[in-house]
Length: 144
Image (cartoon, rainbow, N blue to C red; front, side, top):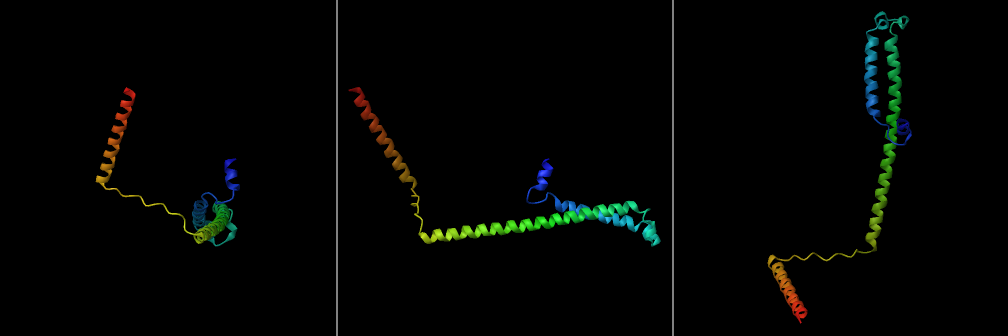
């Protein structure tokens, strides 16, 4: 059932190009069989029954070749439609971006300050001293 659902879903046909190439090689083999057959050797269609296997191979592979060729054409049309839809979406997005740019500039974030190593060490040491003083005050209060 999954195979049927995959075939009926819109979009690409799975491995159509490989099946097309396989049928093309099958036709080449069938044509080689016909060239080596009695009909070509005797230059007469009267011997078609003796060359029935290559004729059937040729008919089956020709049918598959046509079917897979149509699948490839359908896939190409689907691809072109998808490409147009993507191009339209990108154009819409670009026009929206231009409209937003026309409304005004967006607020900018402040630049990240670049501290030197000495400034960082000084700020950390001040913070540690402040925490020690606060702890000492709390201990004095707790001791009273």
